Image (cartoon, rainbow, N blue to C red; front, side, top):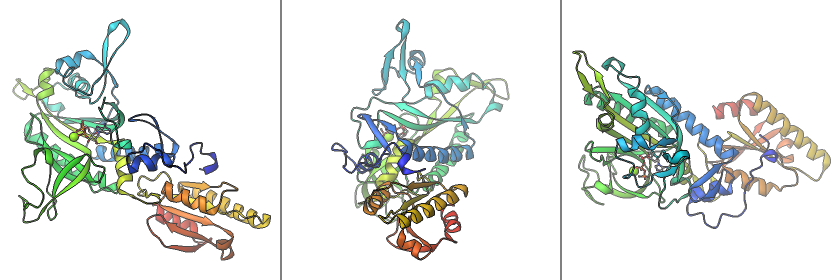
Length: 421
Ligand code: ATP
Ligand code: MG
């Protein structure tokens, strides 16, 4: 894509009300635009990141046998009454439609997925099964804040699994727990599996916590074995000896990017969802649920991966792998040579399947283009200039490094292909 075609440009000024690094950098870079507190548009660059995050999550959920569905976000009142959650979920957005019918905008989907699966699954032979979706969720958060970290409309992946026994649920829960670590690692995030209160259904649920100063949670982590617990339920404190090994417990702020729960038979019981067993009797259905905040993930990546100049996207989620910067000149012949080389490079890379953003603007200084490239944070910057062309080369600089080097015009495409792979 050519930068000159992108309608959503970078801003020189940070938004006055940006209360966190991700809000500031994502708004300044033209990745997102705020409509109201906790409500954002994903602009072309930001949507590319969100879609890459979604693609990784899809792959990982498919690996644990999840089947993708898309449930409605507009949910009638009746199932919320069945589970007695119409009045107990404080963040529920309620609305009244035609004929005075009442609805909620889904903050979570147990009320939809349980009767949905019940309609198809009749026998123990149909279990286990697991369905997930990636969808916008709505929560009337008292304080939407910290950019994408706490929104009122936000993208979530929610998966629900169904089992004939508690033991089967436990096995599957552990499988998903392990896959989650893999999933977050692929996005450059070290998410700590943290014990949290399990509510009424089980002793613990698990949160996946990313350490950042803007995190709203306080967790205690062992500096040796990485056992971790959320402060809300913790029986340890800063400086204690780890209950699992001889390491030391450290208190730190963190943000929850995912959460997995054993729901036990709570929702299946509410809907009278049972299955026929081998002996013809009816057996209970055990459920687990597994959430990931997709837009919160995007904000979290920025929180942990940036410097004073801007974002440093991990390759796996960067909107483009390469940011080509062409540096113009007042000398017409030089200008045309640079323009031609940059066009060739852009065409060759694009043909090779590399995702390239080319800052093709004319009349914008090199300094300004470099500042924008640093702010936008593509993993690799390639500079085409009179100076580099004098050595039949392109300047290569990775966003995460301070060094640059020259790569010859002959080698550049294959080098980039290897880098972007
Ligand atoms: P939190 O404790 O942060 O309020 P939660 O425990 O209510 O979140 P879940 O209901 O488990 O969250 O939702 C699954 C995931 O969705 C969370 O792990 C989090 O990553 C994300 N999430 C929850 N609320 C928000 C929000 N308001 N904005 C963005 N992401 C959110
Ligand atoms: Mg939570």
